[in-house]
Length: 71
Image (cartoon, rainbow, N blue to C red):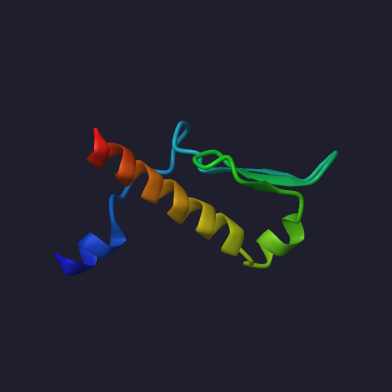
């Protein structure tokens, strides 16, 4: 149970469940569809430097919690 709580919901990887767009050509960009966070530093992202996306995700989740608790 504890591991399931940490893991969160398991969803099938299918169309409609897309989290990020990666564009390599004709320009370079990665965009998180949930938070709107985007960067042109695609090489950094592909090398695992995801801090800006993780921070944006945490802020987004915090905002969602605040919105649901204040309503």
